[in-house]
Amino acid sequence: METLPDLERLSVAEKDALIGDLWARVVALTATVAELQGRLAKNSRNSSKPPSSDGLNKPKPKSLRICGSKPTGGQKGHTGHTLQRVARPDRIETHAPARQCDACQLPLSAAVVVETRQVFDLPPLQCEVTEHQVLELHCTCGKVHRGTFPAGVSAPVHYGPDSKAAVVLLTHHHMLPLARTGELMGDLCGLPMSDATVLASRADAQVLLAPTVAAMGEALKAAPVAHADETGMRVAGKLHWMHVLVTPLLTWLGAHPNRGKKAFDAFGLLTAFAGTLIHDGWKPDRGLACKHGLCHSHHRRELIYVCEQMGQAWAKCLIDLLVAACHEVATAGAPLPAERIAHYHAAYDQILTTGEAANPRAPPSGKRGRTKQGKALNLIDRLRLYADDVWRFMTDPGVPFTDSLGEQAVRMPKVKQKVSGGFRTAGGLETFCTIRSYLATLHKQGTNLYLALTLTFQGSPPQPRFE
Image 1: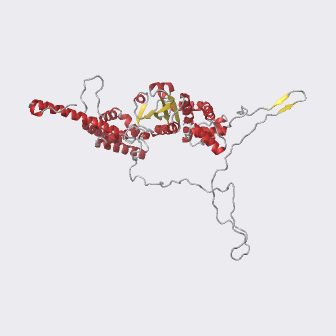
Image 2 (image 1 turned 180 degrees about the vertical axis):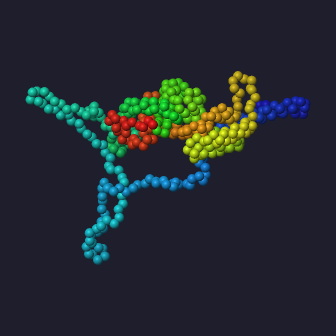
Image 3 (image 1 turned 30 degrees about the vertical axis):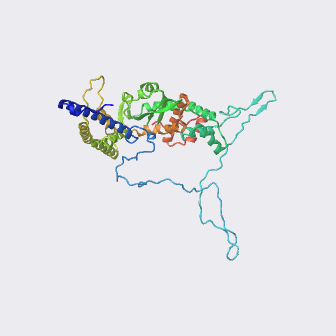
């Protein structure tokens, strides 16, 4: 441990050197403390950390909606959704009083209906077993004529399309793990299933749905605007990556051990995409030969960090500018005219210039490679370099403000991983991606998923709308 030298014996020059050395150490330690405090202050609201990492200290969410633009609660003209009476109930129960007056003991006249109430409930659920019998006829000439089993009845005992549809729906849309799915089938329908049975149903669904999901991928290549994102998934304790490509109508998911270009080349979707891709600015996405639009939810989180943790007011000004432009585009319902675009670009450049003044660039370090700069300055450099992509939502029709569709597509698979802990094999993750692509797409298009899966196991999967 260093000790303070005897100041009485130091010359003025030596004291000046000591003060300079101590000052340099204070500056370095202050920067280190600020960086460490910044790391501790990061959460899902001011960085790209997932909400699951927030623990018990979850930040209070803040809406981008301008206060006072809409009243709270249901909006004018919204009809709402609630139970409505039906004209023809399935069953009627009458509740008549006693047939004799309890005051004078005289008999009462015929009862009339004065009030009705309807109860919506489920009928008793139970497994139904159908036995298929093949008959045989003998002709007088000696030829034997034999009936045939219907398509799909291929074993002495097996599960039907409705039961298979139920387990696939529970595991891939409601995200139940294997064991609980089998238990639930037993509790609700008296048809308990083993893990192997549930896995076999999933494998059958993957084979039947693969052609449809492949067609969805081909349709996404030609989409004018699409959203891309990726997230880590655990496979046998190792990290794999689930990639998504999404439009308002279609959702495609794929699994690969690699996060970047190798995965893009293997899938062949993003490399062939020629529209505008909305993403979070990840470097491999930028390398794709298409137009790019950047997600402002990510920018907003980074700017919140600069504003709240680093105390730089320009970041809040930039958030307000982007939000104002977003609302103006939403109100216009189309890209803004040239004069408004110029107005926002000028304000944008001025705010970034203010940010650069508050974050002086570090001088060259003399080492190989790029000199390390601060977090705020790195953000400013990106915002300047990709300004066209930042403002794509304001200049090009149909380009959204955020990558919310892409983030929504990975949300439920992350729930699946959280509930089940991960996947045992890479093939299991690929099966999940195929089935989830189909169900997420049909769910967005308003299709009854249970009926769709039942028809799938009958050999005729309903096809989604592709445009």
